[in-house]
Image (spheres, rainbow, N blue to C red):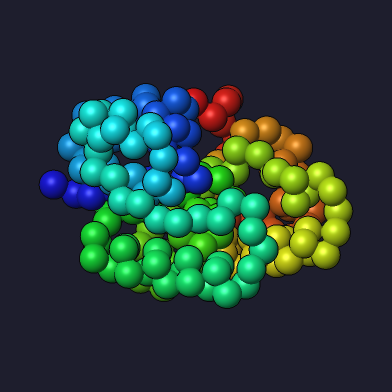
Length: 172
């Protein structure tokens, strides 16, 4: 059975917003593995028939050391699993999970479901996030956006160049 990894910043996100997607992949014969920080909805996700792997993600943290260690953690996990593809949701899985997947030559699909606080309040962090997105998404196999404005912003900031991308009508 081919393995598919979905990574997000919370198990409740997987359960509440990705249940239909998980079920669809399972019906196509994939063994779906969810990578997320430890959380209360983990049992619910496991009851969907998914294997869950905990990873510590400092959701609001800006420590380059912790983020570098996150890339290493993703690399070790993905090397062991050897998935057919990596699907990233939310900023840190999209950036650091994609870097690890690409180092291991794993096909990568990203979902930009929103830009978050780093784009709302412009600061030096915004510039770092733009650079990290540009670096991590440049070899994505496909990038989904929830709205045209986010896609246009990624193009304007040269995060998105010629990668295959499209708009989804909602993130569920």
